[in-house]
Image (tube, rainbow, N blue to C red; front, side):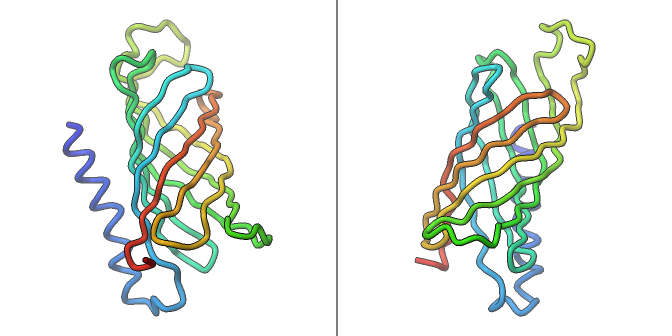
Amino acid sequence: MIARICISFLLFACFPAGALAQKNSRDLPRTGYGFGLVYNVPVQSFGPELKARIPIRRRLYLAPELSYFLPFSPIHELYAGAAAHYELPIPAGRFSPYLAAGAYYNNWMNVDEYRNSLKDRHNFAPEAGAGIILSYGCVRPYLESRYDIRWREATIRIGLLFYPGDC
């Protein structure tokens, strides 16, 4: 199951990049691909993530993402979805701040271990937040904080995106 989700993520992340190549690509930044680490603050657990950042317009990006909290975490779950990133037009030197809003499918695998009125194995999770990313170079670190509106949880994400054409 995890292999199918990873393959779907890669296809989802790569298709828009190819479609945008036909559309005057000199006006848009390049697509970045990478990985990171997610920390769920109230649950106090870590999970890896795969992420892409695909330019749609000058300051607007689509960021598909897949994150997985491992079975030894208090909450064993998989998140898959996408967010829109809007880079703020404020000078921040080498870094670009952005706002993020997205929607994610959440598969809570060990839901039976918890008693909660919101208890459901398959969920829709809207999230909003903000982040900052290095503005240039082939390796761009990012730091992002998001709030899950359904579960009322904050997450902190840190990772690296790779832009092979910008080296």
